[in-house]
Image (cartoon, rainbow, N blue to C red; front, side, top):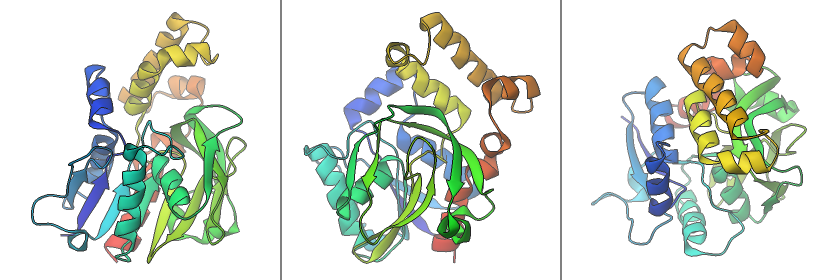
Length: 278
């Protein structure tokens, strides 16, 4: 069976802090999403944000059929090792000509690696659901979005966004918050299929992330106070357990494009189907 390499975007220290709060690592979330639809794929993880974290013994990039890049709490425009090493790894893998898939952080470091610009979003954090993501003509024709409606919602959390795409990139989707919600980024000998949101997330992960950043979300006005935040997060957790609860879905504004597992993860399914299993 095909073998995929998943690059965890966060440092080991960040992952430990998250685990203490019962928040799954970014790579764990991706593994769960992939195995839900492709249980036979062989998945390895590399923690490239830390020194001394290498590929499994005896393997090289040539042994993998594709690279998947998870989310991260880092900033792609920083110059420290945790960021630069991930960009260097992506560029080195891209020299193989094999396909790359990125979510959020994966899109951002692909843009940096290819010569574009990433920065803080002037509209602040986009969190919970990215609303009304619209496919342009290129997006509607691209296999990354096969089966997706021309306008959809997606689970997300990000401060940063793409400010300038590399000149040879292809914009696929946008919304009112972020002009770049999906793009194809040519890099070295490869193409990176990437989105700004998180098709690998489920509602449980969104609830975990909101608990992780609960104080920030109160400070930024998303919640009136901690109690209001707890109430909202509890509704998300309840909807995760009962996705057919019409009242909860209506109150939270969660559409089928979020609640249906295959539709929500269509970008992952399409990338594996068209790029890995072709």
